[in-house]
Image 1 (cartoon, helix red, strand yellow):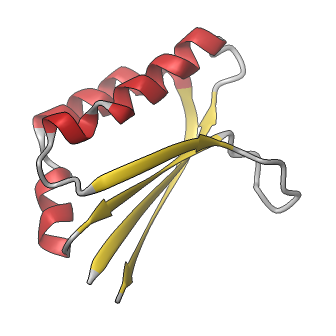
Image 2 (tube, helix red, strand yellow; image 1 turned 90 degrees about the vertical axis):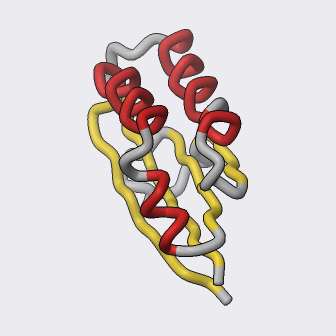
Length: 99
């Protein structure tokens, strides 16, 4: 089984392009810091009227729920959350398991 950990972001209106990029750079660095992450992809939204205003997203892949649970309390993840929080207005997190 593979776990897809999907995170969608709404940036604060005052977040600059540089700050948005720093959030993306920071999340892209996580696999080198957290061995539990199998891989990830990041991207900006392509407008969809049902997109609820989310600006960007990340899809993490984990080989198991146990690996996802290793990631959640990891110091690098906690540090990333603290770093990105001033720029994020809202986020949606959704996990699915696939065969």
